[in-house]
Image 1 (cartoon, one colour):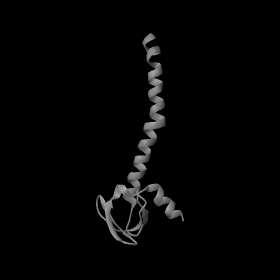
Image 2 (cartoon, rainbow, N blue to C red; image 1 turned 90 degrees about the horizontal axis):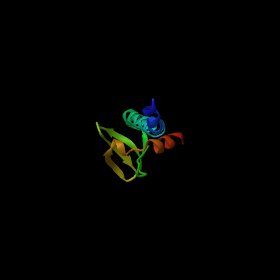
Image 3 (tube, helix red, strand yellow; image 1 turned 45 degrees about the vertical axis):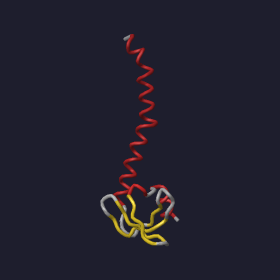
Image 4 (cartoon, rainbow, N blue to C red; image 1 turned 120 degrees about the horizontal axis):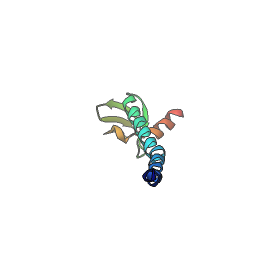
Amino acid sequence: MEQLKTFMPFILMFVVIYFFMIRPQQKRAKQEKQFESDLKVGDKIVTKSGIHGKIAELAETTIVIETMSGKLKMERSAISMELSAALAKK
């Protein structure tokens, strides 16, 4: 019983870290993965570096986007979920 009392602060600290840091991060990663898999040709997107464009081609891990200056090939993970969602609301 005494050993449980000595480890209780560590157990509580781990539980707090899990619910406030690890779990939300896992949830966000799952949402981003779902967003990347839901992309389709013709979607307007914004990359994490701020490039605006429209999806022209999709591959397994890459995409080709049309911008005002031409076509760019980049990784799907370079698309910003938040910025693209904000663009879609406009």
